[in-house]
Length: 462
Image (cartoon, rainbow, N blue to C red; front, side):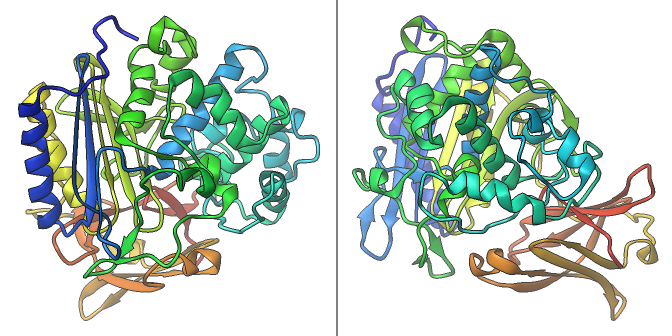
């Protein structure tokens, strides 16, 4: 990595300041525990506050291991891109060439699906397929076989819809071309070369460390299930400390070069991962565009890349500002974690980079031209049914989880009042605390209608 890299913590004054702010803000947002990591121009700052496990009163420390959720997708992408560098994989070749037995819902998708579609979430495969295929090393192979029965929610390459299932399929592709289980492949190709000593995926590995538990509800209680099924690994099962996560981020800050100057990823692949590949229909929730694995986001005219992750009661946030050599991660285990993220990152980026974080979205403070008849109806994908309807002069959205995903959420059915944000866009107050979420309605060139919510595409079915 860069010659100025120093793995030792920054001066106590810096750590004390951010520990104090983290402690204050975790209480304000009812977050049981959290770890903050900051890497800035060769200096590391670590802070921890609260409890890793509120039931057992286990303290959160900088050495606590947390679930980083979907940030795992960037790790899986990084390993895939090392195989692209070696000529083993081609992003634009049909996946069918690597998996001749692959069958997905349509012939077009089966014949033309590529790794680029998977890495940019444009495959059209319904992404929230949470089916447990066991703990064995064949779990990804068995998961891939299920995709023949999973619906397509939009035409191949037509739009963006966040797709966990695609990354489980990617994990199986990596297994096939290397002959190694995904967990072992990640260890050999990424964790060990980077010196990630507290990064793991399997529960029996994580138990060697102080591991955070997810929490649900208010007051927070430890979630009854600690981890998702093993086949979700390539999409979201990596566990890490803040320090290890920032070491991974530094690999990308330094253009693919690891510590001691060893190159793991070509400069071209590192750049491609953070280069705009597809625009997001909803630019309010999770960035403005997507690269290969990385989310891309504009703050006050400057571009960041990063990713978030959510599992059962745990949330993780990573943002990288390359022109400032700044990477910041926040690992949490319940409560209003996104409110904590917004308040804390606003302070960190303003102080260290002079950068203003975008203001949170809120209902428009001026009249917005809307046509309720244009959006009222039913929108549905495998794991969620969404209804938009009018009641007492207000627009209401009601969501209902179904299938395996319904077993993993606290509330199966919820509804909210919709408030105009912009033409075709609305906001809802999901937690009743003014933390607004966006709903974006749009139409593809073929005339098909969609609701983009939670970075997922929901086709209109009625």
